[in-house]
Amino acid sequence: MDPLDSLDPLDSLVLHATDNGVSWITLNRPDAMNAVTWDQRERIIALLAEASADPGVRAVVITATGRGFCAGADLRGAPTGATPGSERVAGDIARTIRQGAQRLITAVLDCEKPVIAAVNGTAAGLGAHLVLACDLVLAAESARFIEVFVRRGLVPDGGGAYLLPRLVGPQRAKELMFFGDALAAADAERMGLVNRVVADGELAATAKEWAERLAAGPTRALALTKHLVNASLDADRTSALAAEAWAQEINMSTRDANEGVASFVERRTPKYRGL
Image (cartoon, rainbow, N blue to C red; front, side, top):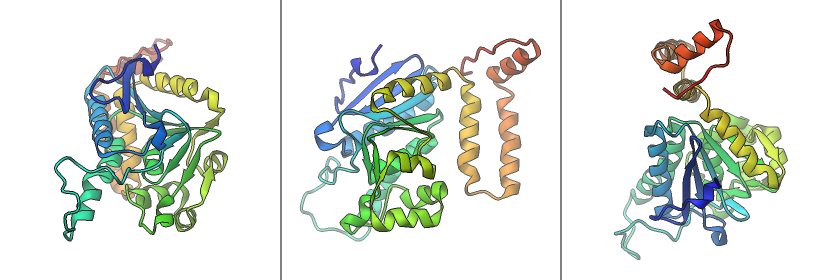
């Protein structure tokens, strides 16, 4: 089944299908380089929440159609009910960022299923930060990553100044954010922003292979592992080790953990069901 064959009737600009335990979320505004509108952002957030709650979903892939992965936020879009041309009130911008870009990034970070970014083209601004928030990143050879904010005289938002230094260190992060130069996929891989660069024509197949491997794994153990790794970036050693111990305590109550131990003792391949 091609994940793009099943269109969500509510929003054809965000294609969605679930296949073999994988939720495929595909941005579909190729003429706009997949710049994300307010409605699209809300749809993606909702789909990620649904993936967390649905035991039939065990991995997520975020990708896009056309030449661009995501050119950032569509600044022309506005929430329903906004009054065009109304006078700006102090706090409006901060509120918009918290309720918009930051909610999107947080939805990826907090999704209880592993999230793969399959980057088919340019990821700029919020689009780049959407990639950084994902658990694993596959990039086509033609993909580029751009911290475009400085080109517009803006401060990076969508969690960029939090995520990027944790991946490449503060000085590399400043270089990328101060200059706003395009970073080729191969260079992004060398820096540690990308797990694997593949030929453009192999991106979808590789994403499918990785996602289905994750979907066949011990889903709750993966969720707890994701939480531990993400939390460790802000935790002291004592807190991190305590969280690890409790995560293992919780995980040992799952059927998959018992299956994993039993399969080891019985010298057979485990069959995980995500429970």
